Length: 160
Ligand SMILES: [Zn+2]
Ligand SMILES: [Zn+2]
Image 1 (cartoon, rainbow, N blue to C red):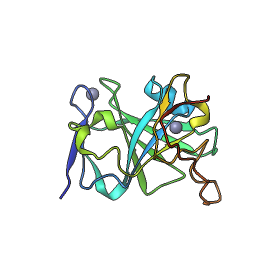
Image 2: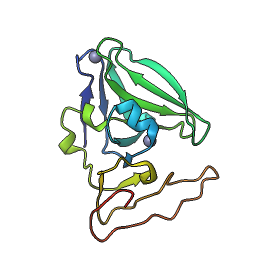
Image 3: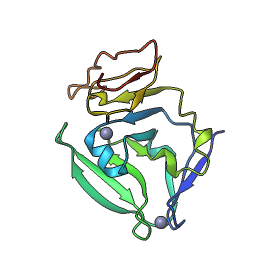
Image 4: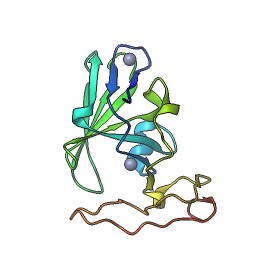
């Protein structure tokens, strides 16, 4: 059975996922750029029931998503500031993890069942992969219907 452990930078907050991620979302939205301080977020998504904090108590900071108007809760270590997971008002049974906070990110299967979202706000120079569903903004609309993805035959720079 899969078991993926991880934690914050200082080790105070630790977590474990009992299964492989349901899917992996690579998100290029401005929220994800800001909260990671980087170009995009690599987010393995788990059912809340399969993801457990095993040490420490993460602090929480709530943000209202500009896109959906729904609350996103950022859970982070109060000592070292590393983010460990996201909770979503929009998807209450799911947890968004941070790929880089796992002890062995290479075992998460980050290239399978992956989709890129909010490619419309991807930073200049970001290369989007081929053979992966790409969504200009959300993959799922607020009414629950799926948007039509674009699939490239060759990798390409965003916004070109
Ligand atoms: Zn820490
Ligand atoms: Zn995002």
